[in-house]
Image: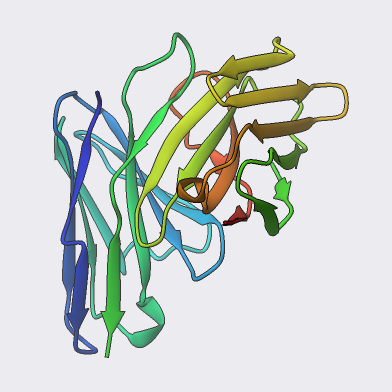
Length: 118
Length: 111
């Protein structure tokens, strides 16, 4: 079945540093990937849509200079949290449309990356 | 904009049926989805239903859709302790846009 690998699963960093999170589709090509952020006991908030070979589309209120997204190939999208601060601590989850289901936009999710900024 | 709502918590005894409810507002939703999230993990697709269907059954899972009332439910028969997790409903249309998720319902299964 479709698999999305996300790395790292956990990262702890100091305030002011940058952190890169990778999202890979292992057995399918994903022209579009989605980055979500999940706060404790809350739903998933869409941050941005990552498009292969072009600029990401950010949701309202998400700082594009803060959360850099690069989708350089059909199987890899990266999210870089620049100059991280404690309020950026969260669970970040990527997903990709795996093509299952005729017409349905079935998303396969990575296992998530928990970022803790000290 | 789209809005998807769920109750926050449900507790059932092992062996009983669980029913998780969801309402949505976007009448153009074409597909409705149910995902499961275990602690510290990503989301796992359980099932999805096309908006012109009323019901879909897959082993222990039954999805009911009332399009008129924009109400979706997930019934888990013979609920097991391994079913304890957070269940998210989501809506979307055809194409490649992101899904909109509900707030999630935490299902607790008591032995």
